Every structure is written in C-alpha cells, then in structure tokens.
Length: 367
Image (tube, rainbow, N blue to C red):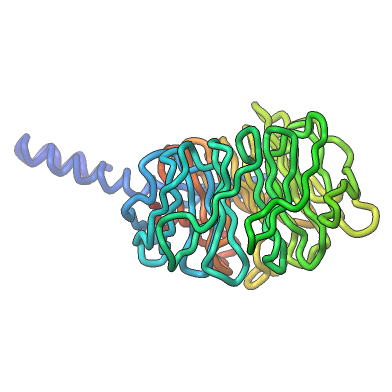
C-alpha cells in the first residue's frame, strides 16, 4: 500500500486513476468467491481465497432454477421457472438439448437409472417423460394429480414411477405403459419430496406435516412413520447401501434449518443432526466415498451456503458461501468430486471437492 501511494504521488492524474482501478480490480477478483472452513474443537473460522480459474458458461435457464439432477457423469438435467427442462454438459459448458411441454414452473426432475430417460414434474399438475436422444417432445404425459406435483421417484428396476403432490396423494405408475396402477391418500400429507430405497420396494417421503414416511410400493401402504420433527421436512435422500436416510427442514434465523440422519434398518431412530444453516435447508445428499476418509453429507440452503458435514459426528467440516446466488434450491452429485447446485439468481453452480490441503469445496463454474 505504501508503494502504491508513492506511485500515485509521482504519476499524472489519468495514470493514477488507471493504476488505482487495476489494483482494485485484482483485489475484487480475488475476493469474488470466498470460502469458510469450520474447525473443531477450538471453533476457529478460517477464510480462504480461491485461486483456481472460474468459468462462466452460457446459462442453462433464463430464470430461477428449481431443481437439478445428474443424468450421467457428464450431463445434468434441470428445470426452472422458464418452464423448460434442459440437458446440459457441465464438463464442456454446452446445452445438449432443451425440452418444452410444461405450462408452468418445473418443480422436480428425476432420472431413470442407467438410461438416457428422465421425468419432470410441474406446477401444471403434469408429469412428463423425456428421452435425451429422442424428440424434444415428451414421450409420455402422466395426468392424475389435482395440484402441483412435488415428488418423483423411479424404482431401482426402472419399472415403476411414484409421484406425490400437494393434493395429499401418491400415485404409482407403470413406466412402460404410462398407466396409474395404485393410488393412496393421507389427510394433510402435503408431499415435499420422494425417493426410492435402493434394492427395496420402499419409497421415502417428506411432508409439510413435519413427518417422514416410508411407503411399501406393494399396495402403496404406509410401512413406517418416523417421529415428527418441529419443522416442515423439505427433502430426503437414501444412502447407496439403503441403510440410512437424511432429511432436511425449513426454518429462519437458525431455528429449524437443519438436516437429520435416520436409521432405516431396525430402530429407525434419529442418529445425528446437522445444525448451522440460518435459513431453510432445501436439499441434502450423501457424498461418494471415493476420496474422503469418512462418510460425508452435503446440504444447501436458502442462506446461500453449501455445507459439508461429517456424517457420523455432525461436525461441519467446510462451508462454501455463494454470495449473490440467492436461495440455493437443489443439490446433486455430479461425479466422485463434483456437486451441482441450483440457485435463484445465478443458475447452476459447479462445485468441486479438493482434498489436497484437507477438505475444501470450491466453485469452479456457473451456468
């Protein structure tokens, strides 16, 4: 700073201004994407500056992105307020295909395992099936709910699709024929998310009545209901081995705003809680075990932050602040080291885990 002052005194006014702008520009560039690492037990917060190159790709959507899911290790599918579903190669930064057919905002997308096909749900009460290598028009249109569709889950063998809605109902569909085969309704069960348990006939469901339900797809009956939480449960996911599940809740000012780990095997009790967000936690995912020495969970929140947690202890290991993104709406695992995070204001963020200096999470691209 002393050197800068000397240079400012010796240079003409125009050059002074140019040098000042150049210095400030470099400083702003360095501070653009900051991360915060949380360390226990001494509770020291360390700010780190990202040094890797950041790519600003062409946007996938022209408005808020509501949901993102990984179709394969290169391509994700997403939906938003612009009523479109987009397949995007997040490694090259290119749109693969746009799909149009819904009349209102896309609320959910889910992919059929080991295929190029996927489903989308919308506020128009419709569910549509798409093929990445087929027409840009839907292969199927499933109509059966009376209100916005807020849950989609495909069975592990890809033969059935379960849908849920704000109309308190779940529907089970035959994927091949597109016909509804089962229907169930529970009073005040406003569905917020659905996911299928790997290798099992069970479907996990979160609800605005603050509960987590486990449904048996054989007859579509409630097999188990977990103890009710204090806040609305917004999202859920099941671990790859099918032994555990994680749900998250809404909240404000740090009240609620948490994720909870549950046992799906015997006791089905609460195992651990992850507290530290200050607004609604909209998404939670189990992270791959490829590089980490411990099981990890990631959460994204309306407070513009993504957090990485030690699954077993509940310790927050890293926090990434995506300033200017607005509420973070959806989180998906891209590959062994990459996360995809949808947001209100800045589209989809590509995040990468780095273990070279301990666990870090960095934003490397946005589209």
